[in-house]
Each structure stands twice: as structure tokens, then as C-alpha cells.
Length: 103
Image (cartoon, rainbow, N blue to C red; front, side, top):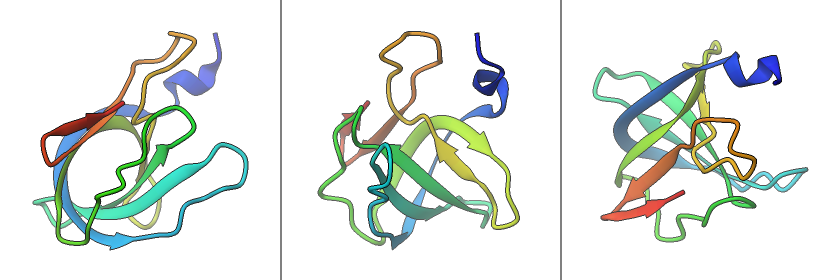
């Protein structure tokens, strides 16, 4: 087992989309956007769209629930692993937007 699996902390929460970013298409493709939690903290969500469906209806101001792995950084942090693990070695995550779950 890789130590990378334990590098972050599982985080499940919700927030408001404050900025939509372009997809990262280098290597594994990721849908990227920034949310603001009720605490005021901002997080970058990096959702792997090679392993889970893209949230195509996502809009600025939308409310989204999420569960994934949190990594701290100077800008508040990033949440990734918002999808299932096809190798079943990592806790699966998800996004939920407008009543639809993306995992």
C-alpha cells in the first residue's frame, strides 16, 4: 500500500461555488472550481473526470456537497478523491449538486 493514501484527511462538507476554473487536462483530467465554506474558508475542488462524471450544470453561486481528501495549502486547501477508487484501495468520495451525486 502506498503512503500517499494516508497523506490527507477525509473531509465531508458543503459550500457555495465562488469561482469556476478551466479543466486541468494534463494527465488525469480534473474539473476544478473554488468553493467557500460557511466558515469563510475557501477550497479548491479537483474532481477527476476520468473516473467520475463531470458536473456539467455547475454554476457560480450554486450550493454543493462534497466528500474527499483534504490537503492543506497557503490558499486554504484542495479537496480531491471526490470519486470512487477503481482499485478499491482508497475511501471513495463524491460530489452532490442539485440532488445528483457524482462519484
